[in-house]
Image 1: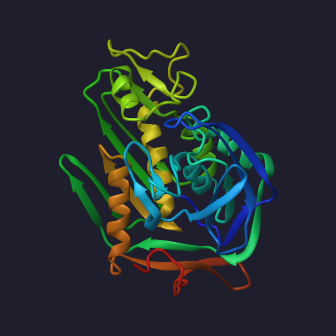
Image 2: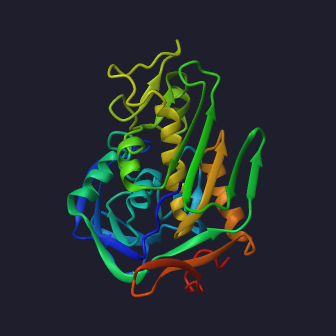
Length: 316
């Protein structure tokens, strides 16, 4: 069974902030989340030295890179990197509209999971707005492939993710996980899953300018002998696939609206997630925009097709 739909958009009740370092840049950064008006979506406001440098909307049309993380904007200019964890938290917790001010170009990695973001949103709570929430309803299967990897959207009465990974390293191996897009389930079963990497890749990543802020405090690290280096071990027995699902949720949140359907991936990643989303939204016969409407004095709810607003990302 998929996650239930909500009939109204939401925002945060008040401002909340988080600070940390970027996992790739290693630079300190603060994020300030503020309530936003209905139909404005998620907007990043990036500044440097106290001066605003520009705004970037959290839409798949703004994706500039998917190498090791998802980057919005121009990687060589105005951009915000590693947005997948915060976007997954906003998506799963049901936050539709929010302004995110940042004094740097990469979201903080915090503990490597989405849990700190969830805790911050729980701290201030959500405010229901008097505008209907729109959904992207999948009408037919859409599949993309890259070698042995693939990802697919399928029609489904609700919202469901099914992710499978397959690593040769014995510490990971083959793992599969299925979950609804539902706040309570995300909070307890997905949000705490941390990003992970291999000790054998560290020097190569550093030389390429990546993972400069990575540590055992914010990443699960797998040693040369195939063992988990972190003294506390894993938070879930299958933490690796749960984190891959967290990443997928964050990447698909860039659709600009929650989707009604199921998403399946095998050996996926940021690049494949972005390709699948682009394939879906590029085919106008594959989806429709719907919103909830109440019938019979509010006793029942049904989904009806609507015209998408002009700024919607599916007008491509």
